[in-house]
Picture (cartoon, rainbow, N blue to C red):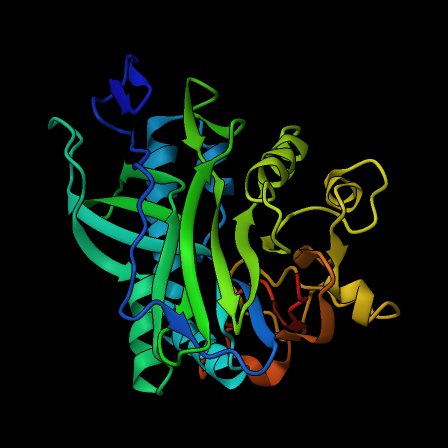
Length: 364
């Protein structure tokens, strides 16, 4: 068997072509206008992990060809069962309801299928089943919220055969979107950068490592003469290199004389004096939640993997809004955390809650 990845070809004595991993080049797309509708001297920023619809426990636990094929099919079905269209519609309503100007999005999935390649040479699957970004933008437009994609951070891109009769390819990106109409908010200087240290997932007992690249994206913003930098990321979870990823973001996106806002899923315990969270604090960043709501825990993670839990199980705050500079936090709140936020079938819109902050931009 051959495993084809961006890092080379690996030979094993099992069926050819069971696993192929593609890591795509960084890309970003501008929408029309490049402007947003901030009000006065303030801007509304949002971070939203939309949830890919599956965890990878079954795939990572597979130690044989058959187990891997079964796990790949289960993963495909899990994403399908998570009702991506209905969930992206619910998140679109959150964005419009809260009048977010800039949104950092994590786990934006593209799920594709293609002919089964158990015995054929590997070719990428191209038939799109779900594109979370397109679902989100379509619903935003339908309900009157015109947004465009500012930047995309490429992430995991892996393809596997299944027992369902086709290959399934999962691409997971992060992104920044911005409101498209209005003239108050001007955007420039898009940057997309991968981390120097990433995690590899072992498959088939460690015979093959699947790269899981992550990174950050940033955009410089001007509102009525006031300027700042907005950036988003999704740090790796339970990974010794996570603090190094934080350092990359601080040294990269944070390398500016402008005031800075970082949003994202930081996967870091709040208040850890020796961990990733503290790296941001030591670098001069302020946690907007603790600044405005110091007595409230505000957990944002996590609901059950199948999103079917009847009682919220959010128990840790890892989706954060950091800022550096003389911002004033006018308001900050969670979204998607209430029972009433669930979609018609009873599923939560994501396994995370989102966070929306209204920040008054400092004068330089």
